[in-house]
Length: 71
Image 1: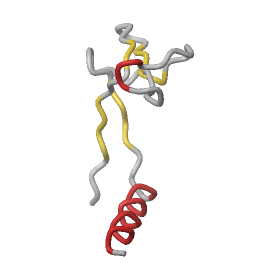
Image 2: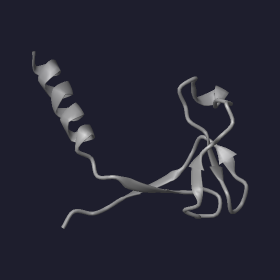
Image 3: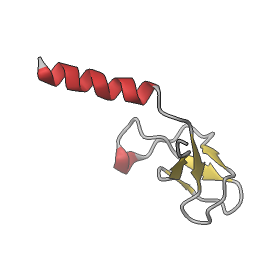
């Protein structure tokens, strides 16, 4: 039962997580978005998203993410 309570607490925090800004891992640009093509990232699993950077042309599954600090 404790395990289920712990999992439930984790999901509660995920639902209320502040939105975060994503950045390109190659050039640091905020002009990155989910890739429009239907490819998937084969080395990272079928459900992995791919991202495309408009500034430098990066195309891959990894992004940098910054969360807003509370306060």
